[in-house]
Every structure is written in structure tokens, then in C-alpha cells.
Amino acid sequence: MHHPLPTAPKTVRKKNIFLRSYFLLLPLLLCAHSLFAQKIENVQVLLPGRTVVVTYDITGGNSKDEYTVQLTYSSDGGSTFSKPLRSVSGDVGEKIKPGHGKKITWDVLKDVDALLGEDFVFKVVAKGKNGEAGEMIFVEGGTYEMGSNESDNEKPVHRVTVSDFYIGKYEVTIGEFKKFIDATNYQTDADKKGSSYIWTGSKWEERNGVNWRDDVNGNTQTAMHHPVIHVSWNDAAAYCKWAGGRLPTEAEWEYAARGGNKTRGYTYSGSDDIDNVAWYAGNSGSKTHTVGTKQPNELGIYDMTGNVWEWCSDWYGENYYSSSPQNNPQGPSSGSFRVFRGGSFYADDYYCRVADRGYITPVPRYYNFGFRLSRTN
Image 1 (cartoon, helix red, strand yellow):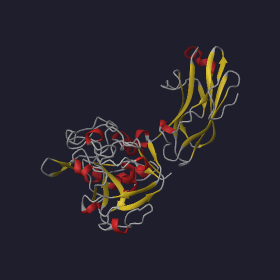
Image 2 (cartoon, rainbow, N blue to C red):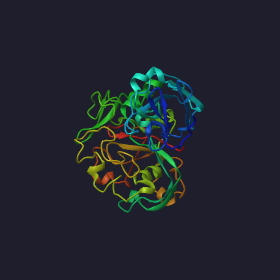
Image 3 (cartoon, rainbow, N blue to C red):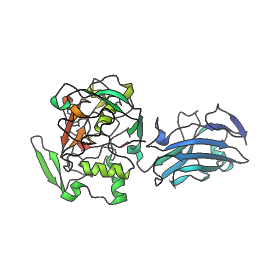
């Protein structure tokens, strides 16, 4: 029996096991859209004899990428999913590369005790090396009014068109950055300098021995799901390259923060009430927080307001807004400063507006600077 997606549910009796023989066509990491350019596509199920055979493709992206693929099932119609099925073989498990004609074979009878009498839904899940930080939101391109009249640094308001792109659902976390360090032995600018900068309440203090592993007070960071800090623009760009992506352009960042083509015109990313969407000076307790614990914006993106300032790819140009191209502006071709956006846990609400922008040289590392991943396709 052959059921390419999408199909209506079909129930098949096998040894008193009811197999709803269709797959939910879900992209990687269960996002509303695929991770980076990769998609699980052409998922099909065959029921020959005592086995269930699943075929699928992992398409797009970098041919060197590797994924951990699991075959899971739900016994409540897809509301919740179990642990992966045990008796499987083929293109399943660790180090599965993108390609066509992938195949998973499940020996039904070996799992009969666990599954007897259940009516369940299959799902193929593929997790990449980027984990939670690699979970991407697809942003459909469009045209919007970039900037504001609030300050000279945000003028003039000008029309910008951006193409489709992907952007991180969350800011890159300490745990995810650690994977990069472990895989590459990369030395951050804080590692090289042997220090990073902490705000004491009255001044910036260069503190020795502080780096990406540490929290805002220079202590060992035990919360691996907090955004990584003490990273320079150079460090952020190096991570993004390793992860198969890049930093977002300033135009992409602001478009996504405003909610893309689903925008409701909020002052902050997702709300006019900053407390709903951001960790900032008014509620953070002067520290970072686990990513994704406030409300998302219209596109389902978290923490684009507050938590940490986020590096963008652009060089800063004082008059660039007056002369930038309308289509996919990339920033000046050179400069001395890089752009950062979004406010932080130590910023007042004024500096957390979606139009606010800052700039600094790319080498400094601070306890309130982080970033998120982006990709074109």
C-alpha cells in the first residue's frame, strides 16, 4: 500500500495493530518552515509484509551537513509524540547526510507489545548540529518603511524591499556556541584578549578571565539556554559561517522584528507593551534569561526586543539611510563600525524599539551583546 503525501488518513490492520499510514509533512525540528534550506520532502510509507518502510528526501542546503534522524509516532492523533521507535534500520540515527531516496525500515512485530491496539501517526524528525539555535523561521520577503523619525540615527524613513530569508527563532545560546567551540577549537576575541567588559552600574570594567562561557557577573554560566554573550562581531560571524548561515542584514533584521508581512505596527517586536515580549532594564533583574520565555512576535520569533543586543552583518554608515538601494540593502562596502540592534536586558525601553540602531567596532566584546543566525535559502 502506497501513500504519498498528502493523503487522507488510511487505517491498515496488521496483527491487531492499527497503523494510520500517512505521514505529517513536517519540516526539520518541527518548525512551521524548514531549517535553513533543508526540508524533509517526498515522505512515503509502504507496508510490505511484517515491516513498514518509510522513504524520504532531505533536500537543499550544504551537502556536508549531517542530521540525527528519528522515526516517531503519536497515539493521540498527532497531539503528542512518543520516543523514537526502537526496531528501525537504514537511514536513521546519527550522521545522516542530505540526499534523495532515504529509507527507514521498521520491524513492526518487534515493537508489537508497545504498540498493540494503538491508532497512531508517524513522523520523521531530523535534528541538525545547530539544535535550538538552528531552528529557523521563514520570512517571506516584502516592502516596508525602514527607520523612524525618533532620532537622527534612524532618519530618514525610507522604503526597503527584502527577499525571502530565514532567521533564527531564538538568539544563539551558550550551549549552541559551545558546540561550535568544541567542533572547531575556535578562539574568541575574549579568549585572545583574556578579558571582556562588564557594566558595574557606573562604568564599563574590563574583567580578566571572562569569556563566552560566563554569565553577566563573570561567573560560570550554568544556564545553557541563555543567549551567548561576551562575543564580538567577528565571533558571531565565525559561528554563523560554521553553522551554514550568516548574520542578518540590518534591513532583514528590522523587517523580521517588525513582523514582516504580518506586521501590526508595534513599537517593540510583537507588542506595544514591552513587558510582554522583552527582558529589558525594567524587568530583567540586570541579567540575561532563557531564550523564548517571553511572547514571540507576529512571525513567531522570540527576543528580537531585549535580552541581548544582536549583531547585524552591515558596516555602519552615518548617511547610508539617505542613499541606500531599495532592494536588499547590505550596508556600506566598508567602514569602521558594525551595526547592532534590538536592545538588551540592561537597556531602557526607548533603546528597545524595533527602529533603534547602534554601532561599534567589530572586535569589542561585552556582557550584553549576542546574535542570531540567518540564511538566504
